[in-house]
Length: 335
Ligand SMILES: [Zn+2]
Image (cartoon, rainbow, N blue to C red; front, side):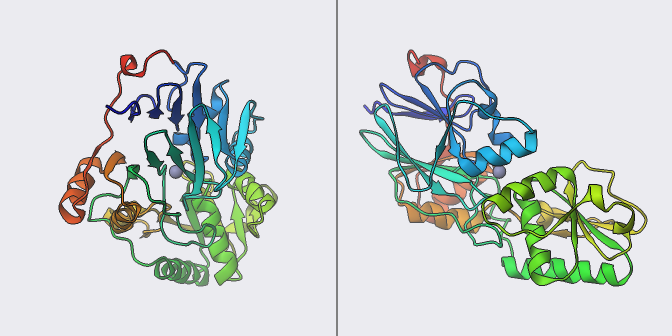
């Protein structure tokens, strides 16, 4: 019987006899001295572990974006680099590009018995701010299934970019300022860059987006933007594009017009605002191709359309796919 255990216990757990790794933990309790935390990217649903006092591994970009967004200096962090293995106990962990946002990684874990790849959130196409996720062969694959329902097949990114620009230009011609309410990290920078590359419209961002923009600029992603604090009254006259966060209600007026950019747009049909299927995640087709390319003998799925995607992978790709099982505390020994 294998000594390596894989499962969910307040995060994705991979453990050998000597070492326990927890990937993107969602709780801080019960993290013992021999537990090693790895964080894939700076989105809030993945960064709970950064708030704990334990030692945390993440890329320098992830650490910087988190610090900027939360205005907080992290301690006890170890910065990891793409394709540079890190030894923890009897395990070796190699960060691989995930293509989801700046600094996002997958983690390839080599145990004495087998190789396991944990994807975190992945995107398998190039965007204006990220490169497509790297594929690595592995024995077992733990992958996200956010858009695993075969209904979700996104149009090409360039087609979506073109539609967004076309819509925004039409609004600007009517004297209305286009407003995008999106995640402060990742999606917001892609939209800023989109307008920088394809239009001459100045882009105004709210303070959260501006902080993450600053982090991007530090790492060489060129973004031209104006922070809202320096340009409030005149932004609603159709001469600016506004990129703000989902809950920010302060940026709206009868001279602005709102749009949504998310993969869920494929199922949204609002008369009030247009929605564009621009996602930082892989769609079902990309996920299936990725799973096949890893040649994994076993695939564990977590988050999103887990059951639907497991069945799809079994039937259409002949893969041994199932939901990631929960692990009881007793199964993990004295960590
Ligand atoms: Zn994410």
